[in-house]
Image: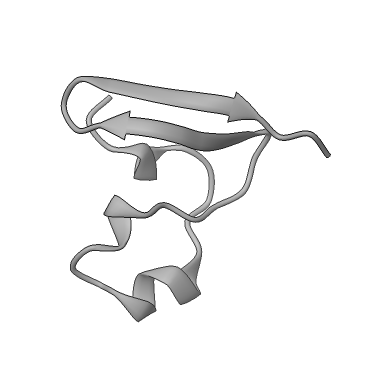
Length: 50
């Protein structure tokens, strides 16, 4: 996994706001949220409380 964008559905609004760099601050849907990301090395997710 090299990019968190591959998880869930990406926000079209977030993509349009910053087309070149939106993948660095992912916004999407699903049961997990991005907690930390070390590009090319480690991706840590946390469970959504709601």
